[in-house]
Image 1 (tube, rainbow, N blue to C red):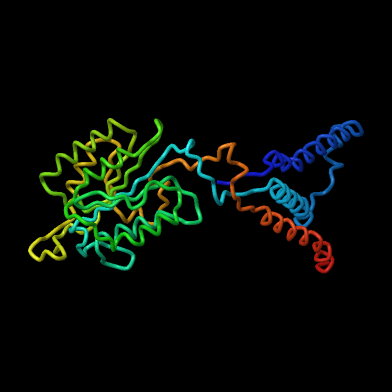
Image 2 (tube, rainbow, N blue to C red; image 1 turned 180 degrees about the vertical axis):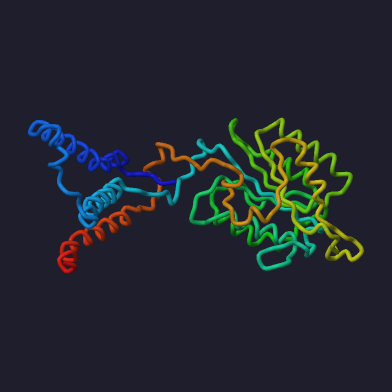
Length: 328
């Protein structure tokens, strides 16, 4: 989003148009005082050539770019964290159960393990040069573990994502209910909206499916939240590493049934989300700059770009008479 150092100066861009209108009206009034109405068409000057009409257009363009440069276009490089203004929070939850070690998921470099595909996908949602919303990272197997409590540092998030696919959690299983409970216990403001992004293959034991559905419905009642279920892996059976007799497959049917529980629960495929900013596909409003923080924002200043264009067009204007004489 573009901000302006002196936005009121942008109104000066209309001054050439205002001068042209005023000049035209004065000329018509002068002609009406000096000549009869029937003679006015005969005293009009001949139409200017295309070469002559280009000068006023170039002058107006130079003026517009100079005004843009004076108004000071800029974009925020860093917005200081203001906890009082935070309205949205994102928690990325990574499934680290044994089935996520199966090598049947699609990634940028071809077929890879499901957990590697999950971390690579999540890594494409962050840009270290841009401010993001408060985001946390959690992993679960038999128990849930915080890898990063909610933070606004995308570089720190990227660091933990780069390491998480090699992480070996101490317990076996797929206790997603405990992960949701840990998120629910986070301190939050009354207006805080929590967006949970669960990257999983949906391979959850039968006896844990009903408790999972109950936990999702209970969270919907207790806190403002959304839940995005991202399915990873193939629907064809694959061998679970370390368990030659056990097969696993991405259970899209279960994930879709969970998505049907509430309008704020959605099932998503990974590929359409690859490379999209997190705040974009979660439809989160960008963080606003509060008046108290306006003097602490680090800006990218863009005034040099329109100024350079104005200087180049001015040089073209200065050389046009010479160009015309050479043509003659």
